[in-house]
Length: 71
Image (spheres, rainbow, N blue to C red):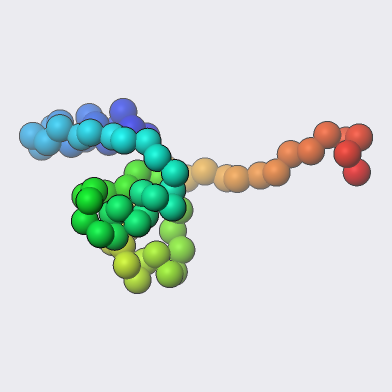
């Protein structure tokens, strides 16, 4: 996702800089204007009241796996 976004921004003359950090810290920093955007933050109705979401760039399915012996 990072490479796709970097390429997209470069086509319109912007250089994208990515800093990896815990989501909670990233959300707070974006809310306070320290960063302009977040990459890959899941949609929630509560977040949508604060942040503007773009159209989805990709979709993923999250699942939980366990060993058969852990039942």
